Length: 287
Length: 270
Image 1 (tube, rainbow over the protein chains, first blue to last red):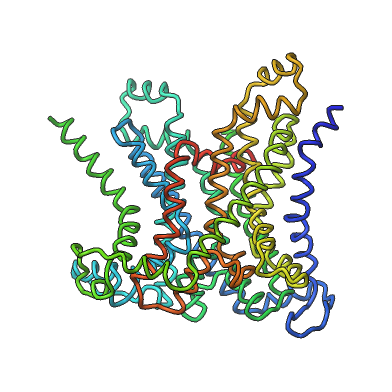
Image 2: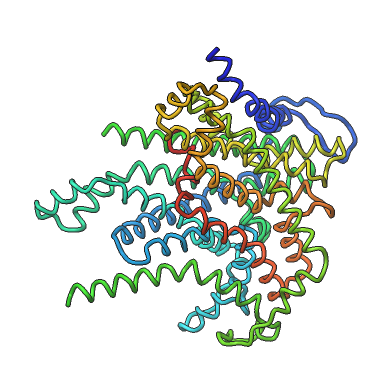
């Protein structure tokens, strides 16, 4: 009887998830071992792991790995460090705190396409507000998105703008829920503020920081909208991360087999990174 | 004295930090409200006579109103279907502690959207369903359904078991206890899940980019198309960007209290 009710509630959703989520994952795995040019009109052709082997000598794939790595690591480091620091700064009672929190929710909720469009304008060489501000303080204007060297830093800045608030708010919520006793006894013992932060606060919020980093990393490694709207992977392929390369392979060249293999690789990277972070998190819990 | 200086410095710091997110939105709205000449002037004008011409153009030219309607239809159905299937599932998972399902959903979230898109593109193409609401709602459900389940598992787990037991003692079936007792108790969670899912669907770009067409184009895709046609018309672009960004921002105000809890559920336990 219990088992029956259990499935009355869950089965409809599980069946639907099976169709819309599990079916494409399995199909994707299957496609990654086939060759299929949509345009050729020919059917699928089984090639085993050849699509994966071909990637090893694919320079554009290697480039996309480097871009993915630089972009996500840069964004993640900035977002975690900035987000945690700002959360520590804001962790006290003050008037308008709720308004401040609301303001930081806005970038998270804003449509990525719109945000990227606006940042694209702000990075414009002649008219962009960023170069105008640089010139106002006596610096030279920069090419930003048009420069192969600066395009990834520029994208990291935009990503940091949009997603630091998420880390900030997760960490701040955790800080607010901490018990006050350890802090009071540290005060009594005469610890200064830096000692308190590094020896008491940070160890206590470490699990929350790792969770925030996990949530963020899942999306940062797979970033698509922002880069596609701002640079389309350019100049040339200087900002083409793995997800953009998959998109081009699948939907510009219609090489669905290769694109599927690439997608599996991307999934493996996200999974591996998260397993790594959850090991860090669990080892922290035991300490 | 020192204390009040410290407090003033703290508030100055808070204002400076808040200016960073605010500035970008402000700049977007201002660019949308400026005439083309004002947008091209250097240095940029902080004081200008605002014009709604860009907003009028956005709604006047092409089918922007249709795109807004498409986005609304797709998001609404993706949310309602996700709630219909997700609420009972979340209740079951919480009540019977089926944690493995939650973990499986977390792993599914790590799968790149494009892994879902390629198979669905092939299926919808062979069924002739590209550029239909069915294609868009199906793929948006890939995001909204697991998300609703995550949030609601959290909220259902927070309900004391005694509440449901009392209802059972009063003669309710499990199903009646679910609809009459539990659903009202977790209404804040449902509201948060619904609003966040709506925002996710509204903001979704990749699925809609490939699966929509002239009949079903959603606003993010429409705005992206504007960029390619009209790179220099900053006023028009910023006005369009403002129009699509305002709904998610306004919705955020209503779910402020639970939004971070909602965004982190699922990952916290995994």
